[in-house]
Length: 152
Image 1 (cartoon, one colour):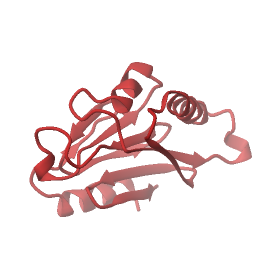
Image 2 (cartoon, one colour):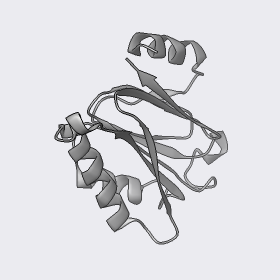
Image 3 (cartoon, one colour):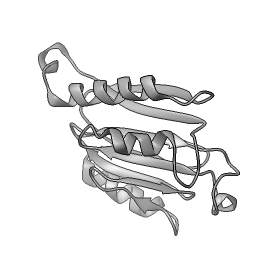
Image 4 (spheres, helix red, strand yellow):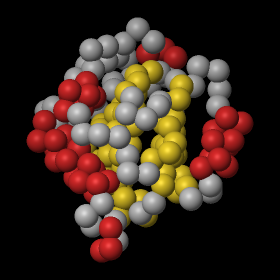
C-alpha cells in the first residue's frame, strides 16, 4: 500500500481515543497506538501487564516509540514505564536490508536499538524481533493484535 492509502485506512478504522505517534516520539496508552512513515526509522513497542496503570480497564497498556534516532533514555522508558512498570513483551520491527543497503543508517539504528533492548531487558520480560521486507512501514497496536503494513 502507499503511505497515503495506509493513512486513509488507519483514519477510516480508528476508534475514539486511538492515538497517532509522531516521528521520534514515544506514547503510552490503553487504546490503539499507530504510526506511519517508517523509512529509516525503527518501530519499537511494548505491552505491559493488563492490570497496570490507571487506564487499564480501557484496554491493555502499551507504548510505541517511532525511533528516528537511537535514544537510550527513551528506550529506558519502554523498559521501565513510569506509569505501567516493566513490560511483559517488547518488540522491535526490523527490515531485511539487502546487500546493497547494508551501510544505510536504518540498519545501524535497528541494530543499536535491538542490542540495547536485549542488553537491558528486565527479568521476566520477553523480547521479540519482527522482521519485514526492506522498505517503508506503518504499524498499529491494539490490545489484541499488531498490524504492520509495507508502504511504498
